[in-house]
Image (cartoon, rainbow, N blue to C red):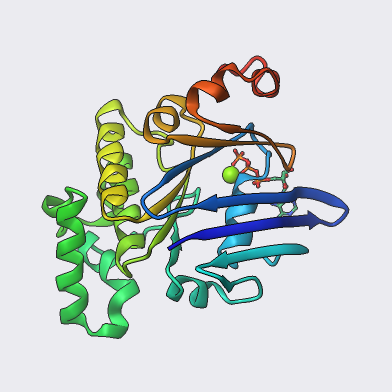
Length: 235
Ligand SMILES: Nc1ncnc2c1ncn2[C@@H]1O[C@H](COP(=O)(O)OP(=O)(O)OP(=O)(O)O)[C@@H](O)[C@H]1O
Ligand SMILES: [Mg+2]
């Protein structure tokens, strides 16, 4: 599936959080989206996945306009996401968490799918654990796995690497690899430059709602505008 976003604009009151944002992702591509705090990254994902309605712009998946559709309809169109704040159901097991998005297909079918996804993301051993007791990194992997339950073709990950140990980060990188191999397109948002720069071949940089750079990791690292936007933060 190909995602093409044009002129996506979001204002909160008089504040433009996202200003004529453009993006295109082809199948199997892991595209990075970075930028300082408040740059508009989550706003972009929220506008693309129907959580908020943009003031202007277009979000097309395989030529089909999605602006104005509900989050559920956008999910059915093949675009899934995770949230910046972990959102597992703490009172449920990992298996139960995974099955929720697929329960409409029946418990049995949902559990079969959950086992498939768990295998792909290396979390089979966690299926019977309580979600509330999982280490942070495992919780993140379960969230990505849960978002994969409906077999989306486009996946948006909002800071999946935050708070992961180096080992857990390797697990996440493997998972991203697996997604790309199965031709899922991934939009990866993260402040962890090592993660973004190694997982993505192309990176877009947002600053105060505007795209200030787009290119390969090397081009991005050497871009003076990017260095300036991150002044004092390091890239
Ligand atoms: N619901 C909201 N109402 C008003 N302003 C908002 C709202 N959500 C975000 N903003 C503002 O919009 C701008 C973009 O915020 P956003 O959360 O998209 O940034 P971000 O790039 O995801 O930042 P971070 O890296 O901290 O997650 C910020 O100035 C923020 O304060
Ligand atoms: Mg954010």
